[in-house]
Amino acid sequence: MKRFIVTLIILVLIVAGGYQLFSYVSESADSKATGIRTDTAKLRDLESVVSATGEVLPLLNSIVKSEISGRITVIPVKEGDAVQKGDTLLQLDRTSLETGLREAERSLEAEQLRLDKAERNLERLKDLYAKKFVGEKEFLDAQTDYELAQLNLEISQARLDDAEEDLSKTTILAPHDGIVTRLDVVDGEVISGATSVSNGTNLITIAQLKELYMEANINEVDIERLSLGQQAELRFDAIPRFKLDGEIGVIALSARKDGNVRVFPIEVFFEALDTRVRPGISATVDIPIDSATGAISVLLSAVFNATEGGSYVFVQNGERWEQRTVEIGINNLQHIQIKSGLAVDDVIRLSRPREFRNDD
Image 1 (cartoon, one colour):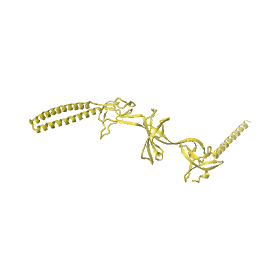
Image 2 (tube, helix red, strand yellow; image 1 turned 90 degrees about the vertical axis):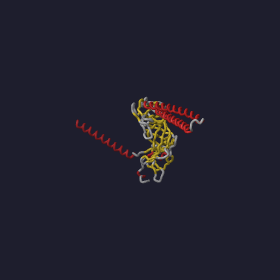
Image 3 (cartoon, helix red, strand yellow; image 1 turned 120 degrees about the horizontal axis):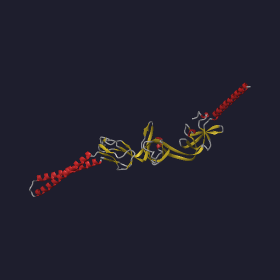
Image 4 (cartoon, helix red, strand yellow; image 1 turned 45 degrees about the vertical axis):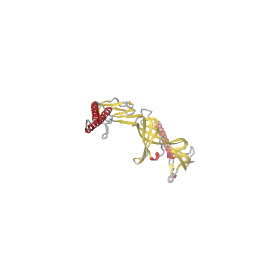
């Protein structure tokens, strides 16, 4: 009896396994028979866009340098500080320049005294010369001494002005409102001034972080579809699901090569409404070109291009597939508008039927 029960159980397992195998084979056969990928024509709202990636940059950005060389004594700001135009950014040592200024002031005073003396002497000789008490040479020499004294006074005044200007340059001021984004020096450091033969030391970088722009390269095929002032939408890799509106502010007049492709640089201006949007992060810009509301559309992969031009799809007609010429419109990189040749709910094939594979 026990052997009979064991045999019965084995038979049941064999039958069950056979049934499952049969079901699997049948399902596989049905899948192969009906596994043709299709799409259905539907009404959709489409928007065609030109997309590009690029980097966010500040619209106003300055690298502050000194016009004179010297040693830094005070740095009242740090990275991240907000500054306004005219605020003190750092102070250079003033000792030697103050000494030079005092020397220039004393030199000017001395030249003024010499001029006063030469003027009195000239006036005296002028009276004597008029009365014939002195000769012409003495009078002319006195006149020359006076004119030289005037010139020396002007030279001393110019040197004083230079000394005052150099002293004023020991205080480095903010050129515009912004944020200190980089501080490249420390207290006590000796810096070089920017001259005609030297670029000078980079001191501080100030950027206006509210008004930014994105620089991107647009393929030459798409550039004619863009215009200044055109609206755009920006997305940021570092900030998922966050978008900002902008507008095209600059379109390059000439192309440049990017590998084997010719591109035109553009700049999209926008206002940073979120502190997470900062210079240096990458962004994607989508620029709407055209739109269609309630348009009959299908997947892009359902539309084929004919060798002689034009487009066509394969439409289900009963149990057969019919090749049908269609007029296409805009696309959003996923669906494409069908202006004519299809009706709503038409089923189309995403791959070429076997019987049509020798065409085109």
